[in-house]
Amino acid sequence: ESTRQLQDVITDFWFNHFNVYFYKGADRYFTTQYAEQVIRPHVLGHFYHLLLATAQSPAMLFYLDNWRSVAPGAGARLAAYRARMQARRRARMARMGFLPATRRAPQRKVNPPGINENYGRELMELHTLGVNGGYTQRDVDQVALCLTGWTIRMPFRKPAFFFAPRLHSQRPKTVLGRRIDAGGKQDGIAVLKLLANSPATARHISDELAQRFVSDHPPQALVNRMVAVWLRSHGDLRQVMAAMIASPQFWSPRYAGDKFKAPLQMVASAARAVHARVYNPEHLVQVVAQMGEPLYLDLTPNGYSNRNPDWISSTGLVDRMNFSLALGAGWVPGMRISMPALPATAASSRADALTALAHAIGQPAPAPAVEKTMLANLRRLPHPAAGGWRSFGATSAQAGLSPAQEKLALGLLLGAPGFQHY
Image (cartoon, rainbow, N blue to C red; front, side):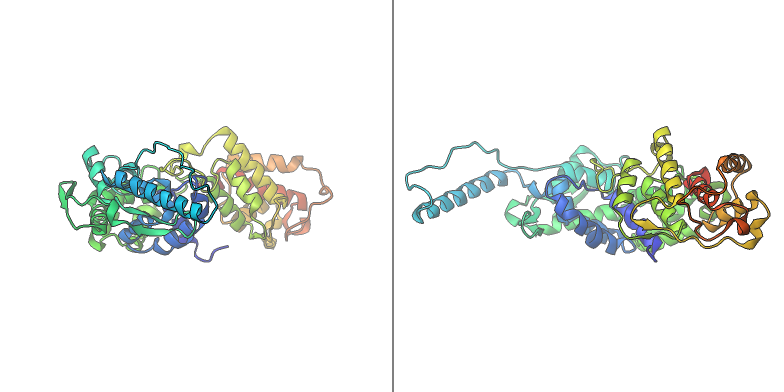
């Protein structure tokens, strides 16, 4: 129902690019804020600001464990500090009478925290440079050192980004051949700026955007155009998107219908096509999950795939058709469809009515083979319509289709290849 469809589609793209897993501990409390206050405000801004916002978000810090990453040697000091604080708390409780004064705390061996490379690795491999971006394992180590001390204040109470100087590695680092010696929190800022402005990052993300919006194998000329705008504008995502949309490749018939909709795209676009008013989205969320894309539940940092083969399967196609038929019949719980009446010109034949119905949902007339199959299915439907079917606008006198046939035709069109591709 958004009036800013492109912004919502891009928000979905960037959440997937900077994926977090909802059920990893505290992330079940952080994810909503992450999507709405970290990702959404930056999707048409500069990439560096989006990268910084995700790097400092409690959701990402917790998901990829950077909140526990501390400089070598600082972990032992932190463990000793925590032990002293625990001893003081126990002594205070003993003085207040809550614990026996002679009771000693149980002795447990606790491994002190240390450097954690999870975020540093995914930052370069997935978020910026790409797997072939020219970095090495030493660069991963050095980036992780730059980001030590980037942690969460009160993660289970009132979570917020916090830089802890005592947990940060103070020695100089070298990332991609560049010396990083800004000091303290600025080490992390410097490495994020370095990665955000890298030509490898521009190419990696321009390719991903073109893959999402144009083709699994986007034309090199399009990617080159986007990279040039990225480098000229210092990663202005609005300008990069505008360059892609204005390109001849974006509008070329060669790439029309080249992409296959992911489950969330399919369900959302189908609801839009039938002018649905959703008053309870719970069932739609379950449908998207059944098709293989449970929201916010991709366990790996990669996020869900943008490639066609990963969404095309016999089971998935059956699920899509079942949903389409239920939607066309008005049987999907929690929503109401309000299709407009078909034009009177559709009354001459079932084929004309089918074409008019396809146009009403924003699709061209079905291909001859598809149309033949649909008409054969419509002829099998009993006439008049079975009880409980109601026309959504057109009547049998208007369109040459009974109310039940209208519903079946709509479901078949939504489940057909023409609607599943974009």
